[in-house]
Image (cartoon, rainbow, N blue to C red; front, side, top):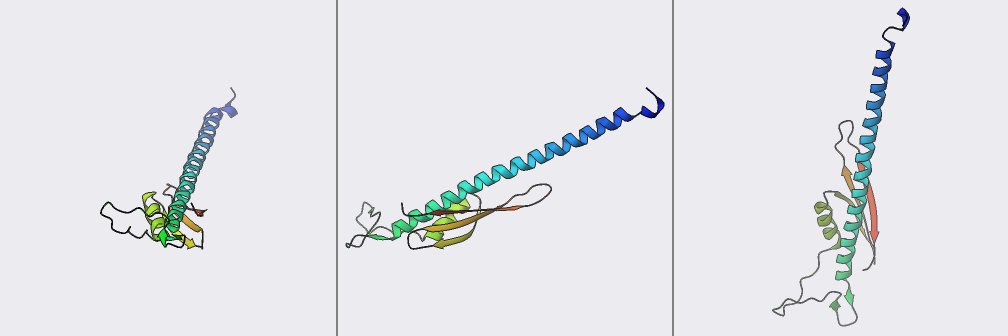
Length: 136
């Protein structure tokens, strides 16, 4: 080894370690964001489905005025009115640990948008997902 090459192995090892650390950090961040996006999409779907179920329970069936789900309690009392679709969507969003940012009720479908703020060390991105569900 000549005098001019002394210490070059240390610099190459240091450079390789920094490169490996950067790649590992990027992989961890990508994995966290990808997992959160999948969970957010599932939460949006569940939120829209619960709102659509509430919407279909609110609509009467036939000319008799009965509701779509006329389950009566054992004492014969009329069934309790179902919750409004956006209230059901908000409740489901809270249970899925996301925030309901929009709820649009059409005549036969519900469109919801949910968001989630990730708490990563380097940044705090806010992810959003939308879902639409119709009659069940």
